[in-house]
Image 1 (cartoon, rainbow, N blue to C red):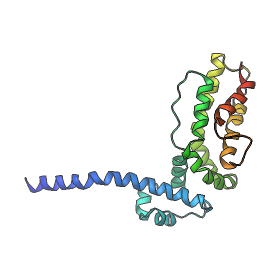
Image 2: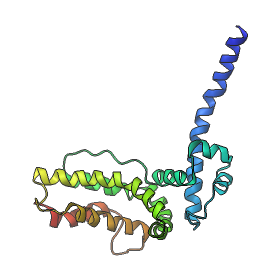
Image 3: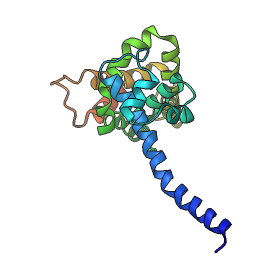
Image 4: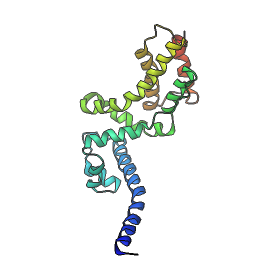
Length: 204
């Protein structure tokens, strides 16, 4: 084996184990941001230094991934929400339940406190509000598409107010996450009951 071959092989050996560590660092950094928010720190007060210390990484590691604190916060909010669930497309009811059930997942419940801490800041900080909307709007648009598809297929009323229906579906779900004490509305079957309640007025 030549020296060049040995060097190449050594470089490959060093690079391969680095990939999982990078993925773990990404997760640790985002989790650190969410942990600081859930502890009651405001988004404005959170510093890259504090995130680095909590995640156990250097500041340079963070800046290689996110060029600014704002980008880091946006990444954390996106990680908190998780991916949009895949829809079967068989019926409006089934797809709406799938979307709302994702908001009741263990992941969503875990980050409910973060959302509660963020809400006051979203009304005060225009930039933070813009970042939050940029994360959630694609998810809301998926629900819009389901409602519009229902109008076209005849499952829903032709005169349905899509934006109002969107609010009626998402509002209770968010409140159930932020203010979980609601003994008269059990968690089990919540998405199904909410969708059925809305569809009683929205169905064709």
